[in-house]
Length: 150
Image (cartoon, rainbow, N blue to C red; front, side, top):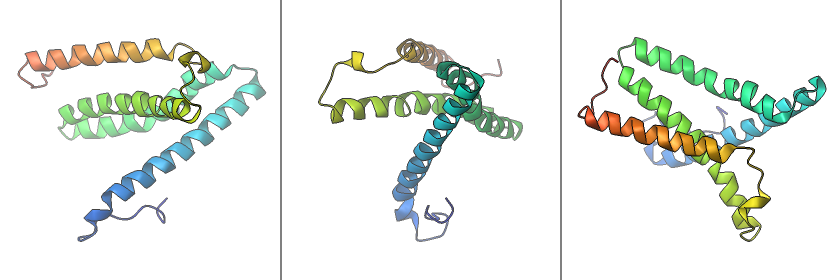
């Protein structure tokens, strides 16, 4: 990864930022694919369904690094950043991680109906995330866009 992503910290290399983001997303996609294949193989070996493996171990593995970064940021006095990062990572995971492959599927296979995709209840989870985010934004707006300690 170090050799493929341009270092944009150096002065004069800021124009490579979009390229660095694109390459990082490609690396994230490849690593996610390997993680899913690995979880599926381990689940098959242990006799555990893919849904259970993905919803437990996969979700934990994806959330664990974010948890530690939130803790570090919050301990340094930036609780609002940790809270916003928490919402942003969930939005990115659900809307880019799930939405992008689905829209690509529809584009590639000529707009087949949604029933061709197996969602296993993901639509309900995404709808609940939308509702929770709306409630969160309303509460933050009602408190003058300031996060309170509670």
